[in-house]
Length: 115
Length: 114
Image (cartoon, rainbow over all chains, first blue to last red; front, top):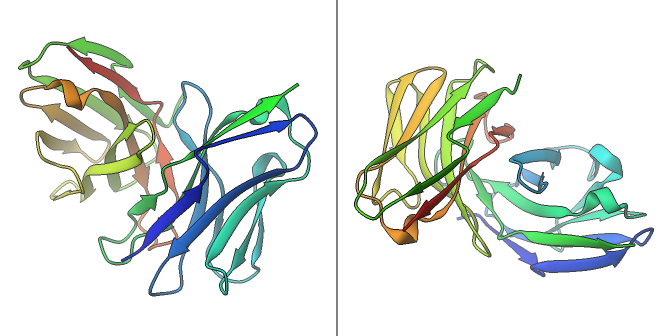
C-alpha cells in the first residue's frame, strides 16, 4: 500500500530564505506524486506533480520538487520565500491499491514566512 | 465563477441533527470525492463516485452517506451529527485519466457540531 510522510508539521523561514518541505513516500509500484497548497480559508490547489520523465518538476509560484527514487523522496523547494507563500502544503501519492485516481495525503506542513 | 462550489461554507449544528453538505461542479468531470480535514491529520477520504451509478466508501465512511444526483452534483449527509464530526469538509473532482490525474478542490465547508 502507498503512504506519504511529511517531516515537520510546521516550518518557519525568513522572507528571502530557502524553502524546503520534506516528503517521503512508500510505494510498491512507480509512484505518481503531487504537491498541493492550501492558502488560508481556501481549498487545495495543485502546485506540481511527477508522473514520468524528468525527475525535477517545476510548478507554480517558483516551486519545484525533485523525485529521488533511491531516497523515496519528493521534497519541495523554493529558492527565496515570499510572504505570500505562507500556507499549508500537502504531499500526496496516487493510490494504486485502492481505486484509481484516489490520492493518499500526508498530514501537511504549515509554512510560516517571517518578514 | 468557481469550477467547484460547496454550500454552505460554514455550518453550526447540534448533536443528533441531520445535515447535508452540497457540492456542484462545472468542470464536466465524472469523478467526485468527499474529504474531511482535521488539524494534524491531513485529508481523509469519506466517499467517492466515479460516475452517477458508482459510489464507493472511503477510509472513514461511518456516520456519513452520499448521493450523486447528477454528474455535476454530489452531496454528503450526516444522518445524526456528533461532535467528532466537527471538521473542514472538501469536495473534489477529477477526470478519469488514471493514477496521474489531478484533483480539483472546492473551497470547503467548515462544520461545527455542538
